[in-house]
Length: 332
Ligand SMILES: [Zn+2]
Image (cartoon, rainbow, N blue to C red):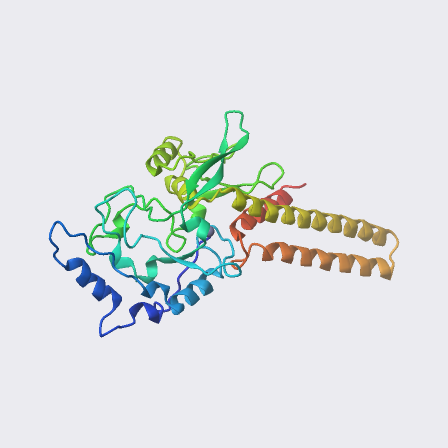
């Protein structure tokens, strides 16, 4: 997950389009205000404007065709799920809540999501055993209608949703780097994400959240271990450590590690030739070091491009590059 700014443009026009003189928000307000006999269930409102092409297009521009939660590229594979950060029609675990219907067409509540982050599915996620080995365990992940909060849930349009204490990260409001970190491992190829410790040094092993579909249990466990509660709950609800995703990040890390190896090797050859040239100057040697130095810059550019906002899983590449710079800087 990577922080994205929605920018200063007005919301996409499709959200405020009028049908027979009224906006969708006005129609859903009237729908929810209808007084019904106790024996009659209120029909689900047919929300539609959030699926407008102008909304999909703007989300695609902002997120570069990537899922807001896991940074997988969705644009090339499947049509995007326009996802309601606060669910529009119902809230998991609260049968009486009507859903955050007043935010169904609110631009600030819409995110692009891949199917795996948005829909509830059985996934394989890592757990750390007492021997500090990482093992896989099956559990249900995917956001669906989940929206756990730490405080009082907003139930009406006039309630302040920002006071709820949302336990899920929103990359347009939160900086995920304040809550999540990547475990690169000794071989720098692990790609597992873990909740950041609230204080102190990084852990000696990935401090993974409790592998439990019960969000309250995950939050309580994270609190007890003094790691980011919102990070831990987000990892489990969005399934940010599901096996395929971890494998994709690991592939990216392997690629970065290969590029790093070539970068270092080219640097060493360049230095060796430079010292030969210093001992007995020759134009060919000077030319060779120039070319090798330029090649090194190109390799570095390539590594950096994998951490740009439009690159899939760019946040793990960023973590790798920071680690790489630290290692280079600490060399004698
Ligand atoms: Zn996703």
